[in-house]
Length: 468
Figure 1 (tube, rainbow, N blue to C red):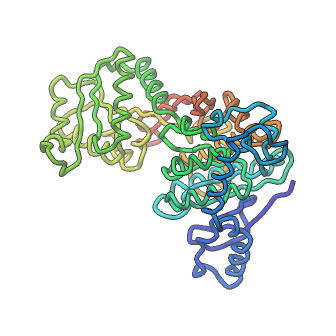
Figure 2 (tube, rainbow, N blue to C red):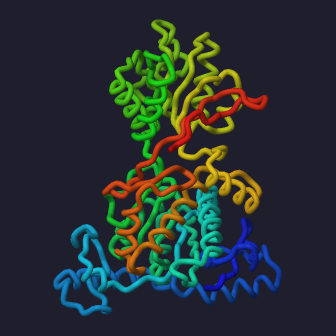
Figure 3 (cartoon, rainbow, N blue to C red):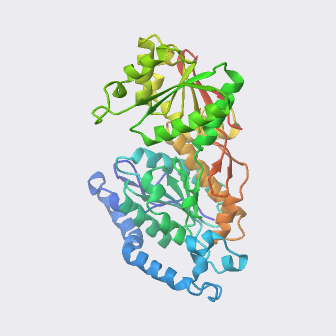
């Protein structure tokens, strides 16, 4: 195996040829010639001419694949080994991905390439860059360890720009590259806009950050994000064992569907733990029709807590609103802590300092974990990117490593072999915790529990329970 160093780009589109081994960037069309010199422009054009071809004729190739699929459905078992047949596709109409070993052997093995499908440019670039960085660090480690089955491999990056059209074009381009599997950023266009293409063509996608369940959207969709239901159950388990809180007020934002769903899960788990829901508060957006002023006011809603003040308030919205909520509670003399999801682990909330003391949240990654695997990852990430890794980077790192582990364990690089090997991984030790997949390819993993407390002279979220 050899290490492959191919031209890549930085944030302004400037081309460089060193520092990112084993990365084949299919986003070269985005590069701006204004950012580069004459020699670098020459490298850009050469790279474009070499790698732009798979992107051409995407719609025609997609249409052709659809025709082939429908034709194959008529007689899925007659094609001899090595020829294109239904066994190389896996739409729900073909057993939702279930295949015999004979059928799997009719599949054409894929290339040892792991892709990253993410918004590298545009409004969602933060999410895409974090995913790319985490996957890239894992790819460098894989390269140093000998690759996949001793073969040369590539990490292939495609920029979705945060939109549906480019995502679908990206999947087609990656299929043309015979890519084995994808690490998907946790953005909506990656998670949902290409599921049919992915599953029809047996292209494994492991979502590194999506909060929406993906498993039942196709047999080749996986998700390693911490499941909120499991996380909230773990948080309530911790509270029941370590706190004396009995009465809980619920506060949700009705303009945020994620907040509403999270609120319902919190309510269910509070009841399951035989604890009491004392208040249910809701916040409507300013200017909502046929809604009273009180229903659009944090102050008015919180004033309801002065009577029969609960032990704690549950908030299921975003960090900025959580900050305003805590400030208003303290203004009204309501001195109770907050429990929430990991969204409030943001600078604007942490800046509350002592006002937010005692707040409890669940999270999917603990960068301060004493776990040697996590320490190694954090140190390597800081050295490579000169900043702390985020949860999104950690998830992409784990997703890439799980794909590589499955590829090593599979009998071949045929899609179904690797898919089945990935689904069979039990207790995979990632930096975001131990991961096992359900039958629907959703991750089973424990949450990290954090509490707002003063440590080393400043208030921050301190991990009080590591995931095991």
